[in-house]
Picture 1 (cartoon, rainbow over the protein chains, first blue to last red):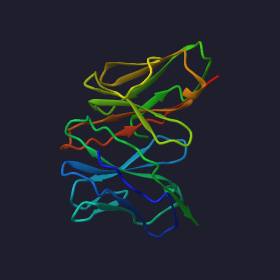
Picture 2: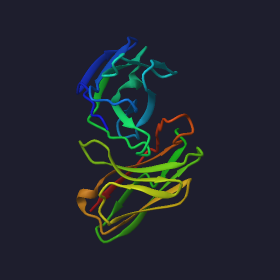
Picture 3: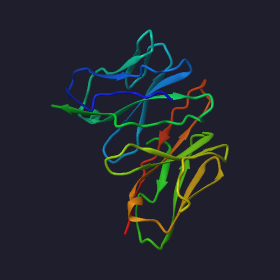
Picture 4: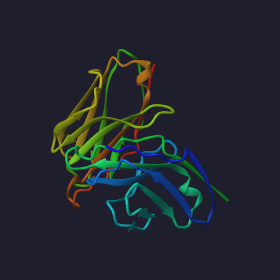
Length: 112
Length: 116
């Protein structure tokens, strides 16, 4: 599975949009981009995933560049409860039973 | 609340003890996973079960023994652990293919294990 690169930390003001970047320049055609987050001492929480089209759900939006080498997770109106470590993962799903390789992620701190 | 429950939430055990961690999902998922998260380290995949069959063992020491009696339940049996095995143990389940080819995973709250 392709490797991802994320900034180690980001600060965001409450009520503003948080834009979390992720580079995955070696992504292959059958790999999805997944985003999860982990609030301190809890299990990770699935946020969103996509293959090549932009996706939106009740939690966030995922913007994938046309060449698929990078993506951005957008939290439209950050709240204090969005403080967490955010993980960007690419995973080939056809033969690996959805194996996810977690990296260090981005520590996002939302401040009042 | 993700629909994945884990018990116990906290466990302290000695190196000679035998204990088991339990995971249960009520989501109708086909795949279940065990992960380990040590302090200051990323999550590490330990085992994958699909339709009760083990499909992945990520070079886990034999003192960790998984069991999957049915698609809804997953156990991790522990014996003669070492202090460095102290960690947060997380269970996850996935619909695997029930929504296209995506495999989003839903995690339980974890069991905080301390080996003394």
